[in-house]
View (cartoon, rainbow, N blue to C red):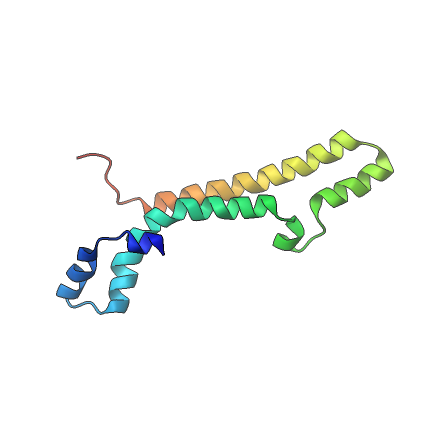
Length: 115
């Protein structure tokens, strides 16, 4: 909501002056500009959500660290199991961060860097 509110009122007026209705204005003018502002915090929130919640709630498999505990109880390889679980979480967060970066680059592809 804040990203949409940050768009200058003149954008709405300019779209109306060329005959766009509210829906066209929103989808063709306002949302693409608001996406540049909203994507970075939304992406960070999504990555935090995945890291901070049980993986079971995200992809419907038994929670990763619980499985590591169960295997550790049988094999007594504590470091190996927890390292494997941490690497899986790290890989998941890395993939999500990469996807977020690609999405941000796609949204900002028309942005100019200088005067």
